[in-house]
Length: 201
Image (cartoon, rainbow, N blue to C red; front, side):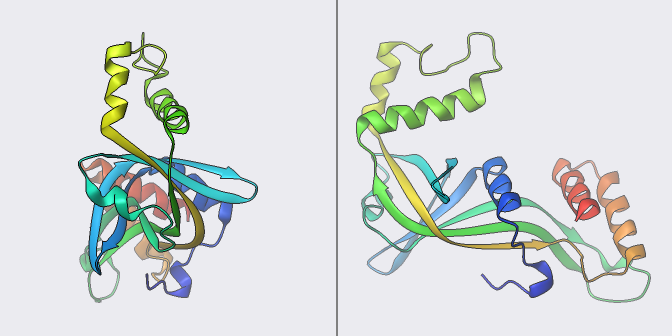
């Protein structure tokens, strides 16, 4: 990913937080030089100063075959984004698009069933713990748990990260104030989220 210096994010803690919060990703590998991609939720964890990204594929989705021992896996973490009209600037210029994105590269492995259950338990807990009788691993029936045989778990050890936060950093302060005001006035929740990011970066 091309990242101009003034959009580059280097703070590891901020990047890690971003990846944890925006954990519905696009994972990209190749099959005989043809790019293939899947969109899926993942768990992001740090162990021994390394980030690991884990999740699962449907067994019918043959992309999982390209994961094991693959050292060139790309995972894209998407943040808020929006069109920025040049009419919001004090002086004439071209429109643009502001966004946040993290590209994480790494080496993959497949999970055994015991590790996959641990991973699924974490994912279910993340989204179900606040619900009354939530669908956590311990709360679902043995019959439902049998569906684990229809998925394949994976883990990727991250060895390279590229983070681009294009948040109108190159615009004068007055333009940035106008941009955040227009975005926050939008009914689009993503625009509101982007407005907050521009305002705090």
